[in-house]
Length: 186
Image 1 (cartoon, rainbow, N blue to C red):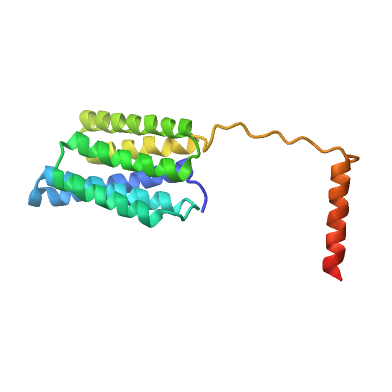
Image 2 (image 1 turned 180 degrees about the vertical axis):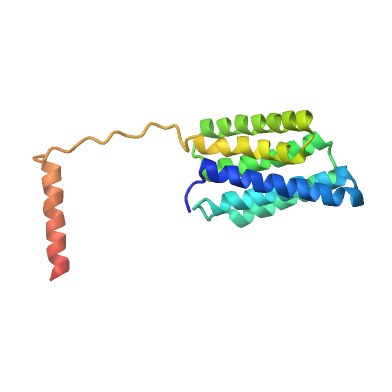
């Protein structure tokens, strides 16, 4: 798979927003809004992490990442921190996993951290203005979708210099390649 695209992430944001609003609307009369929110936040985080893993070619460490994320989720659920801190824990876990799997430098990872903070601000703004769980969740994941604009690494790419055709090393390499091809074809 390839790195996610922005418009694909916008569709994922809409799906996650719909799921969040549906679960909160259906389950709130039975267990209350606080309990449902504490179930929906890790549920959405798990779905989003699964989506990120499906769009990344790196396979190493996925089981460990999910196991550590699950342990963190259970501990956070058991300790019952205040809801803003609970949300920060899960957004921090998403940021950490995305930093580990999509970036190869500290600067892009810090840029992603700033993006995660901005997504929380956008979600709070949308919730305070509209009262809509769908719009708050959609705004959160819409801003998260901007992570595709962050480069994987800010290291300068080495400039490729053309090799002179009469360079002694290049001539020796071509002769060695020709000799190797001759040995293989015999």
